[in-house]
Image (cartoon, rainbow, N blue to C red; front, side, top):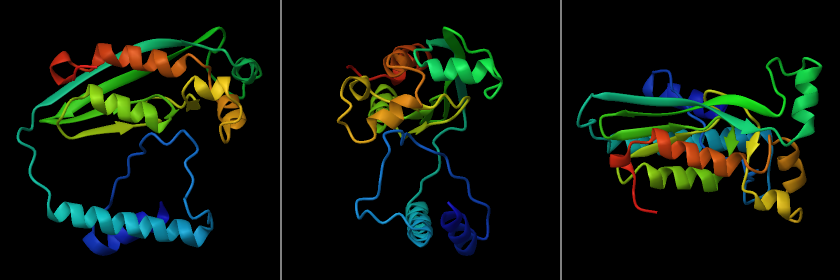
Length: 195
């Protein structure tokens, strides 16, 4: 993100903020190049796109703030997480379940949802559907860092690229579906769309 922050500072003179979205499916560049220089270039390109978008920005209709959060528990199906907590590498209680938090908030007609791990794009798109038709943002790795949250199919089909690694860094197969069930309880019904 260094290229992004430097370019934003150069173009605006202000400090920029970057909110990580759901990229937990091991998203890779299509051209296959993963060099440092390429990463810097992509950051600059993102900053340029943001600055173009800001030229067409409109004020938020209302400054009203709304907020909802919920503490939830996920089953810990990955023995590695339990072992890392037992030896103190992860300094929090993790046994058969782990407690975390999800949240939703809005500023006027703009909605934000917080996922407690690095969610796959699928869950980001599903969350945006639940937030309705207004501008919406999904932030991953917020309120917690519970590894990768991927679809159950990654656990069932090891032929999916990087499935073994992604599931090895995941709390478990049921995390994604449970996340979506719990999000229904914090996103206001008036913002939801029919499924």
